[in-house]
Each structure stands twice: as structure tokens, then as C-alpha cells.
Image 1 (cartoon, helix red, strand yellow):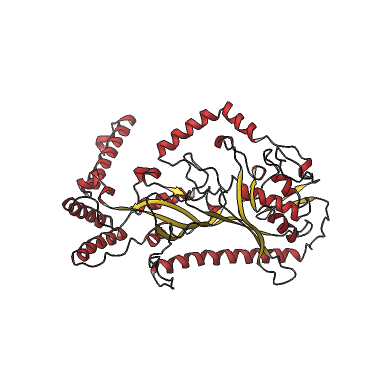
Image 2: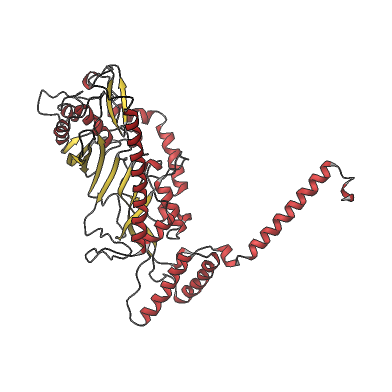
Amino acid sequence: MAEFESWSREQLIEHIAALEVKKNKGKQVAHTNDVSPDKQERMFNFNSYAQRKIALKFCYHGWDYNGLAFQVTPTPLPTVEGVLFDALCRARLIDRDAGFEGCDWSRCGRTDRGVSSAGQVIALKVRCSLRPKVSKEASLNEEEDVQKEEEKEGQEQGQKEKEKEQEQGKREGQGQEPPIEILYTQVLNRILPPTIRIIAWAPVREDFSARFHCRYRHYKYFFESLLPPARPLDIPRMQEAAARLVGEHDFRHFCKLDGSKQIERYERRVTSATISEVVPSRSGSEKPLYVFDLIGSAFLWHQVRHIVAILFLVGQGFEEVDIIDALLNANASHPNPDPSVPFLERRPLYDMVEGLPLVLWKCGFDEKDVKWRTDDYDGEEVVVPSLMPSTIQLRESMESALAASRIKTSLLEHFLQTAAEHHPTPAVGADKVVRVHAGGGRIRHFNKYEPLLKRKRGPTVTDVNETWKNGRGPMVAARRAAKISAAGRMEEEEGPE
């Protein structure tokens, strides 16, 4: 210590910094010695493995994510695709460096922030347990290298896949059938958070697109009626209004206009629009739960949530059922033949409902295109109850989430009962405040309700498109295209729900 007593403060600091550098270099050398030179150059060579194109069916809790689609710019919450892409990379089913386009990624339909799905579908190329595409000698060398890497990393699943490939070679040499495919459901669900669950997978053609081969999309919107002092919902009136949506109509007044897409055709076909009771009331004081089912081939941006907003206005008696016909009468080239139905070139301003109760329930495909299977079901025979680990783990995780949700619901019900001892239920219109159903437990308050046909109107489709083209639109589009290209991300489709 005596030798440092004469040193200045700057000399001591410089000496400590040098010791830190020497210490870190020692750690780096020790770490490098633990990794083989081959592993430093190539962590995992995807070219040594065969690929196949598959479709994945999965569900997710929309309230925990910033929407389905991966975003180039940072988001407050993770996106479903971002988490799913990361899990696929960690399982070494796809190459992270190749990005979304490298695995030919496609999605059935986008959902916005807060919107969930029970049957979303993506399609992509993944690593499979077929024989490698390289030569036999190179293949054997590659398998030995990768096997050593996986043993050092302690990756149990990767080791199992290598053992399957070795067993496959033995079986083929003996004229036996090849082993089963990678357990995609089990592998991914072990990595993914409980808020995203892989339900099934299916082998598909090389040209299969989850978006363009989808025949229909089925959305559900869950809701309850409002309690006093708000107006309750008249379900038969809502059912009558919903029935008028069926068929091919111009839905430009039931969506959010987006100039960046330059959409000019807003005709969409709705094959079914119904409202039914999900959970009947067990007592006079308990509210029943309803669901609005909407099925169609494709939908515009926020189309479902705008439709439900109008149905709520009809159900509460703020609007007549005929408002549906007026809002659908938006195309001058195909006007409603009934002269009593007003023509609306511009949409009356109104707010859409909350996204929490909205679920992309099902994506429909032709059976010849998609035959769903699980890790223990090959898609050909009759489905039977399974005791496979993937099935047990999947159901256990989903049932646990449901149990936790039920407990929270029960607690909130008891809190309300406690409050009711001191605060009785008021009568309808007790405080003369207009309450409009906004979905998801939200209520909008107004001093006075203004009918839709008397409200201010928004811009026309032409105005929105021209404003975007003549403004900052092209510059924004160019920047976004550059970011998308750099991120290896596929182009977005027309719009979500």
C-alpha cells in the first residue's frame, strides 16, 4: 500500500481503470475458450435442415398487447407477432436474420390494440424433421457440429430433435416409416407467455397464404345491457338492425377512412349478423351476457366496432332501426331504390366502441387447403381425447388463466354488493345525464343526445385520399417502406377488423 501513498488522484483512477480492462479481458478469454471456433462462426446453420410450410392457429389476450402486427417503430406494449416471431427464433424454427420475409410469413387478419383472437392464423416456412437438403457427407458433419453445440448449451428440445433425425436415418435404412414431425405446439407453448397459446398446426402448400386463402372471418363482440340510470338495451331492436347488414353493401360509413391505403371500393359482403344470449340471467338482479356474431369474407378498418356502436344507439332508443339503411346508402352509383332513405355522401361523426370485448373468433379455410392437427393427431383420423404432454400443458395453462379471471370477477361482484348496502340503484334518467353504451364496461356521458343525421359530417373518401396524396403522405410512405424493408417485414394488408 505504501507505493500508492505518493500517487495523485488522477494516477490512482488511471491505475484502477487499467485493472478493470485487464479483468474484463480475462473474462472474455475464458468465455471464448468455452465456445468452439465453429460455433463462433456459425451458431446454427438453417441451410442444413429441410423446411416445410405450415399454418399455425393460436389465441391471444389482446389487452396485453399493442395489436397483432409487428411494428417497425417502438410500441408501448409488445405486439403479438413480435413475441411469436421471437419464440420461433428461440426454438430455431426460423432464422432471425432472414426476418419475416425470409420465412414467407402471412397473417389472416390484423387486430388492433386490445382486440383478442380465439383462432388467428399465420402461415410460414419452418424447420422440420425431414432429411437435410445438403449432401450426405456434409449433412453428417453438420449434424455432429450442431449436436455438440446443443449439448454444451443444454438445450433439451434441440437435442431431442437431433435424436429424431438420427433415428429417422436408421428407420429409412431398414425400410421403416419416418418418425413424427417436430412437436410444434409443445415446443412453442413452452417458450410463449400464457397470454399466447398455439392451438393447432397444419401442413400447407408452398403457395398458401393465410390472408388470401381465407374464405371467411368470424368476429364476436361480447356485451351486457346497462343498469339504471342509463337506458337499457332493447335486444330485439338490435337484432332487427343487425339483420339489415347482411348482403353486399358499401360500408364506408361503418369504418375509419385511411388515406395511406388509397381505398376507393368499400363494398364488403356480410354473410351473417346475429345477436344472441351467451349466459342467461340466473336471477332477476343478474345481467345476462350477449354476443354479436358477424361473419364475412373481409372487413374494413374498425368496421366491426363502428357497426356495434350504431347497434348500441339503436338498442338504447337513440336511433331508429332505419339508420342502418341510411348509413349504407353511401354510393351514388348504387343508391338505395327507396326514395325515403336519405343519401349520405359524408359520414355523420360518431365514436366507435371499445376494443376489449372484440374477438377474431375464427378464420375459415377450405378443407383441401388446411387440415388442422396437433402434436398427437395427424389430421386424418377422428380426433380422440389425448394424454400427450402438450395437450395437458395447454389445457392446464388456459384453465389456470380462466380460474384467476373468475376469482377477480367474483371479488368485483362482492365489492358491488357491499357498496349496494349504502348506495341503492337509481332509477332510469335519475340525473338527466345521457349515457351512451361504449362497450367493454365504458359509458359516454352527454348533456344532450344529437341524432346522427343532424350531426356534422366528416370528409368524403375522395377528400381523404387527395389530402394524403397532396400532403405529407408520399414522404411518410417512403420512410415507412424503408423501415419495413430494413426490418425484413411484409407489407400490411388493407386494415384490421
